[in-house]
Amino acid sequence: MADAQTGIMLFLEIQEGKEAMAGKRYCDRYPKSVALTLRMTEFLHGRGHVVHGDSAFASVATCTALLEHSTYFSGLLKTAHKEFPRRFCQEMAFSAQAKRGDTVTIRSEKKIHGVSKYIYGHVWNEPGSEGAPKKIIISTWNHSMSVDDHARKRWHLNETTGESETITRTVPRTQMIKSYFEAACAIDVHNHLRQDGLGMENAIGT
Image (cartoon, rainbow, N blue to C red):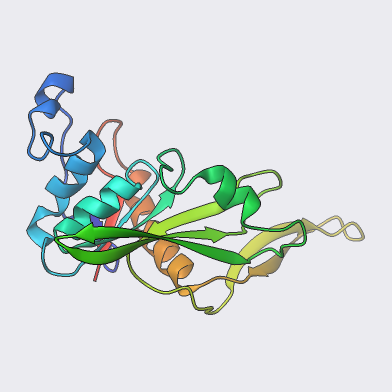
């Protein structure tokens, strides 16, 4: 776990095998990935921090558990899509005429300590490459208002000169999308350096 603003590593848990990990804190109440998230963020519970996690940790279960501990979450949803079915989010949320960068937000209500809280499924029409699925951000914080466009640099071959040139493509995005991917960049620095089996692809910001 790393701080998304400074990149400083905050916590590291070494995996000890199936039986040993099953006896770790929170495993008696939550799924393993959720329990791991809670252990790594325990010193921040109740302080209103935001946890950004990749698809290994992103789920409604993670969002709910962290809300129970007064902590917020934002993550890239892929396989653990219960309550936010991917087929609807990726295909039915947009018409055939949808433009690149369009977003649709779906909301799910949860009772946390008797109080209504909301989990958002924020679908971004940005597949990255042709045929790739649209991106879904599951989040309990932030807003879906538009902000500055996302800029991507790409290489382009000039057929006249035969030389490579850089071009910049821009894609509309919302604040929710911007916040998550800016935090994810801070995680990737450590992911490239880590050894297999170590580390957690999570970042924390305030």
